[in-house]
Length: 162
Image (cartoon, rainbow, N blue to C red; front, side):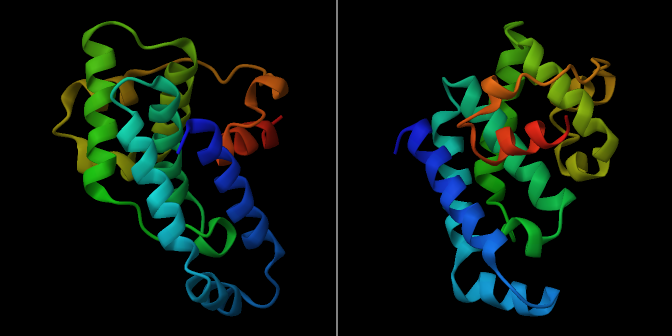
C-alpha cells in the first residue's frame, strides 16, 4: 500500500470512529467489535515498513504512536501500537539525526511531543532520539493547512490546532 493509500485508509477509519454513538464504554465496545484497533495497528506497521527511506512515513508513524497514548481510544480508535514497528521508526529517526537530515517539520513535531515526554520513556536508550526530543526547542509554526491535507490523522490533528 502506498503512503497516499495509507492516508486514505486512516481517513476512512477515522470517519467510522467519529460516527460512533453512545457512552464512552459503548463506543469502545463498538471500536473493538469493528476491529479498528487492529486496522490502526496495521497502518502503523506499514508506516514503519516505509520508514527506512521515507521521512513522511516516519512522521506519520511517530504521530500515531504519540496519538495512541496522548488521546483516549474512544476518540482515536487506536488501542495499541506494535512496539517492534515503533522501535524501527525510532531507529530511523536516529539515522536521520546521525546524518543531520532532520527537517524543520520533524524538529517542531519533536518539540511539540516533548510536553508528553513520559510517552517516550521506553525509548531513553535511543540517546540521540531522546536527546533530540527533550532538547528540541522549535516553536509550533503557523500550520499550512494545504500542506497537511491528505496526510492522515497527523494532518488532521495539526490542522485542528490552528
